[in-house]
Length: 234
Image 1 (cartoon, one colour):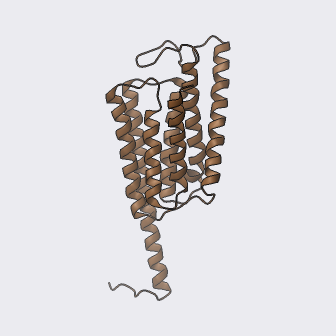
Image 2 (cartoon, rainbow, N blue to C red):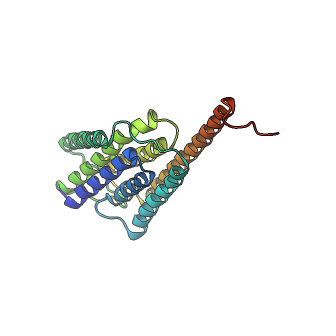
Image 3 (cartoon, helix red, strand yellow):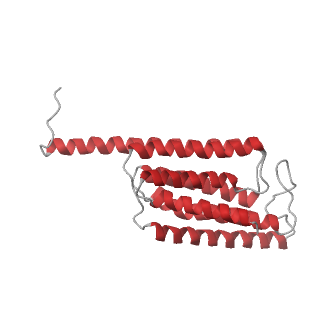
């Protein structure tokens, strides 16, 4: 087991827990940044400097986009609190490890190379021993941990910043699970993954801003009806 990868997974989970549970918008933004940048580094072996730069820059850009939405919107902390969110992330990681190990055992029994479908292609490392299996299982665990944390804010959360953070984390979770199950992709796929993550952040931020505008207009209408604010002249 690579201790560096384990530390990166802990950073991903801790950042995601802070992002979905913090009451302070600045702390939530910092947590999201840590989770996304750490997820960009969760790969073994490390890709080329250009691809690693694409991963890190995409994570920082996504965090900046969400930060702009957090600044103008109402903060929506987790109703469960950070201890429950941390427990949920731990349970998701354990479930992901179990699924990855089970799939690896089935593949090994059938004589299929673990984590690499078909013949190795460009950018796909050959599997040797248990090191690659362990690193891929850890990647899947990180993805399922993010998925367990983010699925509730995305589906059941109110329209706003919390749902935008959930959308970004679910997207990142799916990308990590894909890498864990199928191995690293080629360079063009890495660029496409970065573009998908940025698109998810832009979509979530736009929806959060629309929800803020709608909420402000609704509060203004209520103030006018209750006589707390004069009716604007036309």
